[in-house]
Length: 238
Image 1 (cartoon, helix red, strand yellow):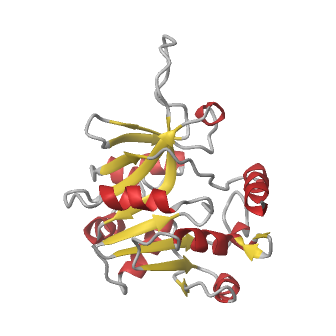
Image 2 (cartoon, rainbow, N blue to C red; image 1 turned 180 degrees about the vertical axis):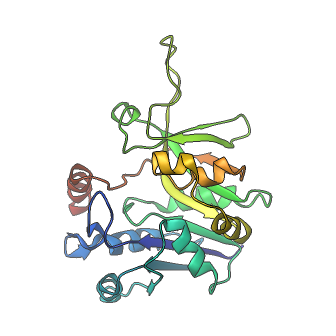
């Protein structure tokens, strides 16, 4: 398969504005993400897709392939779709720009999942830590017996009514799509669940487009808050 990784990098994120340009050891966050993804030998190319010329220029200083996309996109998936219109691939991997702790093992697990040709969309989960179970910034996922996602939520799912201690899984911000799934996504309006949770993957779920979920032992840290940034800054500074 030809596999292209695309990193959506919006300048003015709602919760932490301009976080893609925040520096750790002299490198913007977007560059950390790009260099982490580049470690995978399974990728044919890595592209940062942004709405900001400022991000393009900052990334170019570190030899990262950053390209301008429309400022009208409302989600990272829409930004990935725009790149897919001009760059052909069998699978497009969407790595969130605020996930600088992504590992080559994450990408390998996802690419292996997508070797099953019938899967339109794939993503990853990892066992949730105790602090992530009730954390709304850590998205949880539940799947059926075939590995197909039933739901993603910022709430604690499943609800442990009788203290049976179910296993909780955290969703990681990395996806793989086939072109047909991306094209279909663009024809669909924002769904009610997507709007409520602010989780774009729920547009696929609500429209019966299967998302299959592979498990990885490696956690990652998405940066949504100042506390997240401080934690990642400490880890990467080592």
